[in-house]
Length: 300
Length: 288
Image (cartoon, rainbow over all chains, first blue to last red; front, side, top):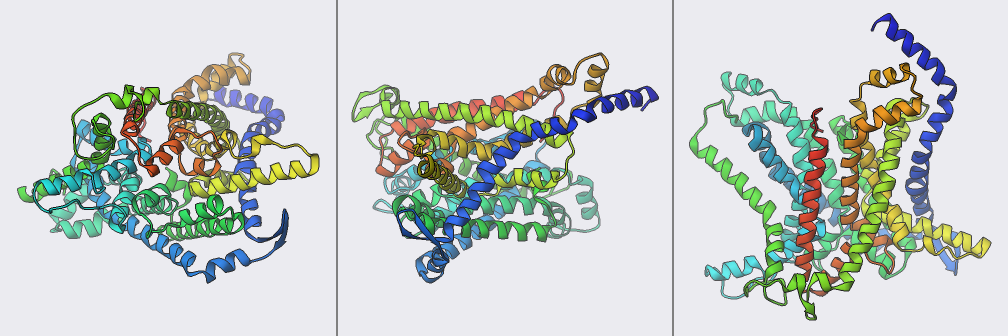
């Protein structure tokens, strides 16, 4: 930097400093309003409502009854555990399905073809989740495409219902979240130098050992952020379990919806909401700690 | 492993087959939705009865096409209105946030930044119920103390806009910040040196530089708002945006008119998404 430039930035700073405080504050105002009115206060209110009991019309008392109800009623408790377990399972399956695809895009394909494949992976994300789920319903229902197809090739005699099972639910959940696994994996695999793989090969490594000792350790940050995002999205999903899962496969977000909209029991609905938020944050926190990442890293 | 290493033909083919299968899995539901928009049958299911355009232009029930279905058209209108409001607000606040986080230093910056990222980890349903409860508390409070009934804070389009704005703003902030980070500050300093005021410099130099990111962020906001379901479901009143109307019809069982509207939605959002990619991919090419 030349002395002239230093002089310029020096005078600029002198002229800016007196107004800086006010300017910063004005610029901060939208942010503060947004975070306070739409994020922080609503969640504080959610906590307050979850900790109260209705005595009469707009009369409330502090109580832990809503949380007690959750722990004593097996249906709620089971749904909660089931949602968590299914979400973890969906995350693992998404990783297993998505990793080879990401590796293919990042390492095997080059140039134009690579970009095309990558963009093709993004397309489903731009289509409303509702439309995607609708597509799965047309494919898998009793009078659907798959059922007709296996009848046509003579595998079965009558129509087969594929919807409303846990396997279908899993197909839908993986479909919805695959993109959020592929994108971080592709970007982390892009930074892996090919010569490292070549060197490992020259030193006698085979596919399995190279994957285990070179590729996967390098991809760990991407795996962690992909898994975290996928887990959160799956846990908070409402559409896919409702439409593909059927009656037996209750999802915790459905319980929250039922409490709020159907039963109009906002107090226990809030408690459920808070529990879900807690579960989601706890798992994200543990995931971030285990992979030594921060939330800001995950976003990039 | 990588093309420069020798590998067996069999494993290469197997790998390629897996990738093909994967893209089939990715494309199948979307293709099926589109194709069945033209099926000449009352239900979006097999058998295939030949091609018809009734589900777009049919005039009377039960073969009511999208273009004559006033309920669907109205809900598209509501969605567009909500999306325009959300986009305007989110791009404005996102731009302010980008300047704040990239240019200014102040106490508590890291904590505020963390809070600004929070909406990404809050499930949509929870964000929806928390805003529902909060607006309801305010409305009840005002009613009890002042006797005014604030209709605007009851479930309806206004709080849907607020709910979507709450999480879309995080995305616009990230997109616009990423672009601002690449800005060469000496350009703005040169403008100041040539006698421009701070605001003039920002207006003539920095904002035009940010424009691609602002347009890109705007398109992303519009699409996210238009297609949002989880948050909207909790906040919606009697005026249903498109996704809510489609969901109701999906549950009841619908005619292929639903496929027709889905197909149009796919085409429009696909085109917008490509445009967003195109706008942001200018000479200062960036990968994120």
